[in-house]
Image 1: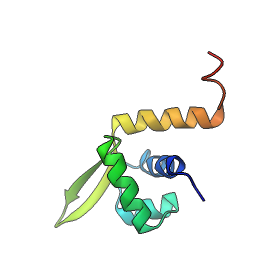
Image 2: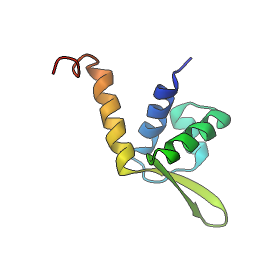
Image 3: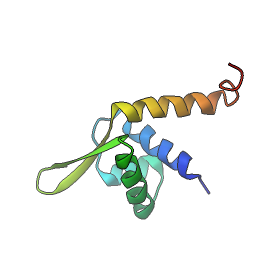
Length: 88
């Protein structure tokens, strides 16, 4: 089972290079079910890491914010070098 932190990182990773995405596409890229996606997106929106926009007749798309990109980069760095922050 994935941690919530890893789930959030997977969602941010899915959004990073793509601009705006529909929920279904995020679900596929992040390998996550709809309920977990919605819960995670709600959290990420509250943290100002993801934003939701309504386009063409009630369709909602999501995109990563600058803060979300920054947090994702930090997560990636920690994942690659987990002890580097302790050595400074």
